[in-house]
Length: 370
Image (cartoon, rainbow, N blue to C red; front, side, top):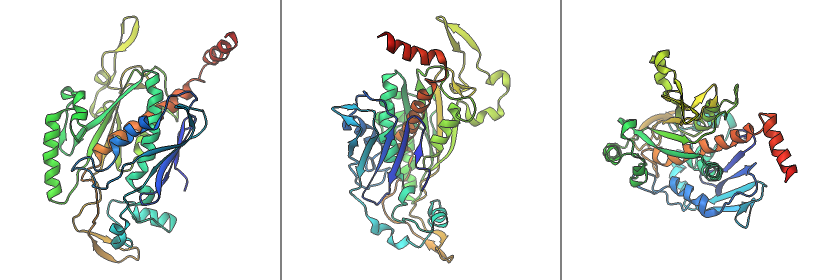
């Protein structure tokens, strides 16, 4: 299977299946000398692990990370970093009754037709547990960004019809509710909405927003590896994401140029913008203002309602999905979006270091002068 590697200079390769022995990631291109330990990575994994509230799957997994290589005495060595999380609470029998059925909204049909074989136990590589590797790698990427003063704030902006307007954001509320929403009042409303869906054996979609502060200007390549294009690929690769927006996103289709353009002005001898409709990106490169990205997630496809489907031999039938499933994926996906954004930014930051001769000379000539 190709397509399990993302990134160029800072690259990650995720591996493992939902009901296999474990899942993990190999990170290549991390510089030596970065302070890193399992506790720092675990903090990120705890944000996505199951069983956190009544709105997440009841599957009980510690998701305890093990560093297998690339770290010595608390610092990265510059060699590939291999991270492992063992699966401990598989219940493969939950899927035995549907091994010959194609679940609506899942990758069962396409996976079977592509490879001629599929791991029906929870979806295999298509399972949300694949994102463990992304989040573990995201913790490493975020440590690099943090050392550069670049900060990410990621949260649930919307659950179903409950949408938080920007002027109602209170970022300190994000960790105060189970839905990771930046407004506790809206979180209460969204919780009531989800409880209603649980009673009717249904699920909800939602939206995650990520904001990046203190980005340097000029990050991103100007043609195929634009910052916004790279971010879109990274975030769209997350299962269940159906749309990615930068800045005003799809609203620009109804805008006019005089309103959509962000005018420049000088503030404390630095270039600034009056507005940020562009979401911090111009011409595929960061413009120094806050980077704003939103990802829209579809409703969890595993619902307990009876649904019509077909068998792998083409017979029409009815499917009833049992097991442990999230009524909404968004709260646990917040850290997944943040991780993919962080990984993308680090990769492009590294690429930017070689864009000008004066930067290259500065690095090597300064080293000679020491």
